[in-house]
Length: 289
Image (cartoon, rainbow, N blue to C red; front, side, top):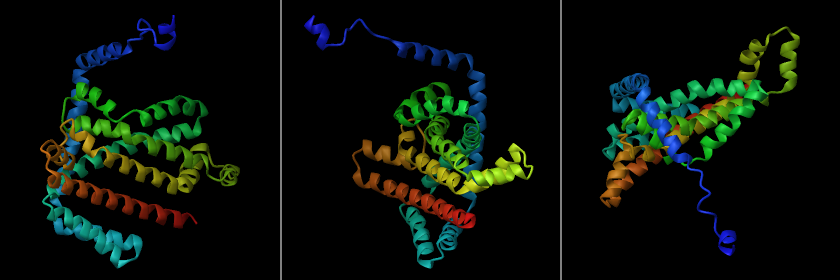
């Protein structure tokens, strides 16, 4: 009796892991043509984006980043600093790997916004939808990132494709939450004034609520980009090439210097993406005022 009180009974076991594994394996077999079509489409988009990035001369990319930093901050020093960060990545010999990483981030963020923005609008307009979606978002946000990798590998094999899917799942939550939060917190008097002038629900949403909530939505975009960047190294575990793979290989070889440089490059890239999007948020906020 004492043993029963101190230790959880070994016979009381709900083995749902095997059931989930069987379901995913069956889905992989039965939906092979469907998942192959998705994989081909996403890989095509990845190739197009990467080709577009490689067509931009390195010096032009650095100049554009410097100019963007200047116009957003109105300080020459900031523009020079941003350009120097990008230039340093090239000096490290990691320019091509940076483009591969940036390609995965761009495509992942694109799909996160494509699906997350409408979902955010939906749950902002429907309490019932919010009650259904919120527990799912909580689960997606609290599950360890490694949990996403196994089913994506089973369904899409290894490489860039499962990296994109895992990154989408991990990074889509902020845009959904911030879109819903921004629309819900638009001044009720402004919404009532729109309705009193005869605007329909859709007209009020797209001409009043979304423009008023744009700074909050842009914050969600910024957080989505940052969460996508945080998956770079993790996705290297499933064969995604780029800066993360360089860190993983160097770590396996116990080469501290070789792991440090791509790590710094990831930090520089994350800072650039963060500061540029934050600058846009401040500009949108200024316009709203």
